[in-house]
Image 1 (tube, helix red, strand yellow):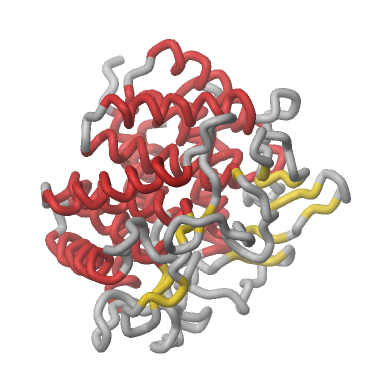
Image 2 (image 1 turned 180 degrees about the vertical axis):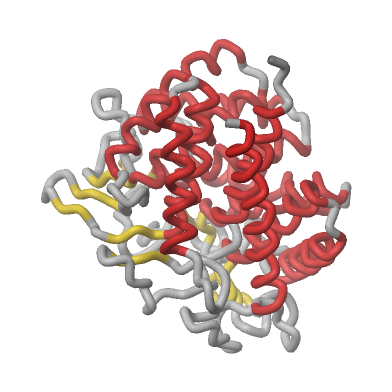
Length: 403
């Protein structure tokens, strides 16, 4: 078993280097600063594409986290570049929060305040502070956190409203993307607020942040995790009435480990007992989406009985971590096998062996989804980089345990 774990770890080290090498060589915007906004499936750069706050905060997180793990000074250089650009161009100095997009020159383009974007800004800035100790990054993370809490927190039922205008007024279209439901609250935003606030707590040991992490986790336990199926409900109205019937297998397995990590980080022992139990149930529910080839299907519409027969890259990355976490919790071999099978699926079908990075996803016949980006508003070095880093850390933890 140790030999297999060590091999898994070695492959994660290699993969981490290869992913970040692609971003170093392909994504740096030498003309306008920061990073380019779009690279297509064939590695063709669109120099005029808008630049997204989510892409840039995730780049900031990835290189900051990789630097902490490896001490590679090139990763630090890239993290510095990401921080300087993000702080200069994405933070709204007048109204607070972050812009959704800027144009290729760095000017505000879509200035709406999407709380999902605020979450990733806090996540990336907190990680950069943890990597460098650069005090301004910590203060920016705190400021964006305070803006999100003061404007978005919904007092009556708890939780956070999705989006606002630039000056924090009500917004008619709250959606992250056209495929989403136009509802006040979503699983997705709340899940990434959990990880963002957890990372801020690592950087800033503040009691109010700790309380908000615990509250978010309890929102998942009370409202978002379906107590019958143990899948996540994706959209809600103000009062947490469900407004969707779609299963997202990738989010199920991502939440399975992120919720546990959050409670473990804030040191809430009684809540951790509950979350560990739910974490395993979420992992089992997510495994309903595993195909015979080891890949995880994208989504299933329970009303229509319709499976979207695609396998996107990010659920495979989350499956690697989430199933490994379930194995650590339970010792059940099937979870370890599912983690390793997810990685084998990535190696066989998801990695672009000729041009680098991972495809957006593959179709039912394993053909790449060539119409989708390699880098863009959504495709970032986040899920796959984090999978490598998490698996390395977790294997080290397992191997270092005393018999």
